[in-house]
Amino acid sequence: MEAEEADRTQRVEQDAQFLETELFEGEVRLEVKSNIGFEQVEQFKKNLRGIENLRITLDSWSEEEGIIIAVTLREPTLLGSILGHMKLVSQVYRNKKRVVVVLTSD
Image (tube, rainbow, N blue to C red; front, top):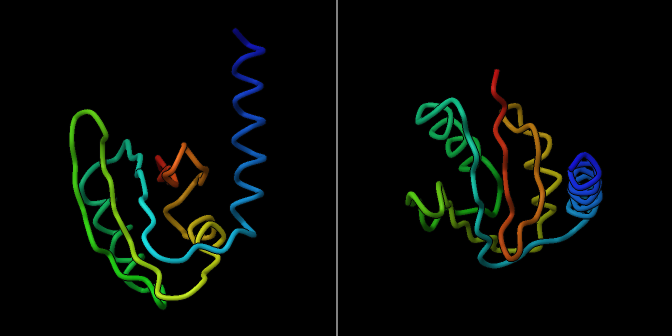
């Protein structure tokens, strides 16, 4: 069990390093994880709105998927790097076709 967790952690770290240099353009779906709640997610969305060339096109929640924020990038952008350096963000990684953003718990 520990070996599986260590392997998962290593994959997430490698993916985070890759996302730092990957250019994103067009629609990107962000899967947002927050243990704090609504106010933290609202602050994160406010921070997203401050990113040049980014527009929030969808903001939804479901019990199955959690919080999904779809954004459109008008030109190639280092989105993973930008997200990873945001004050509220503790981790950014890819989960299939989505970018997962874990917000800080403190």
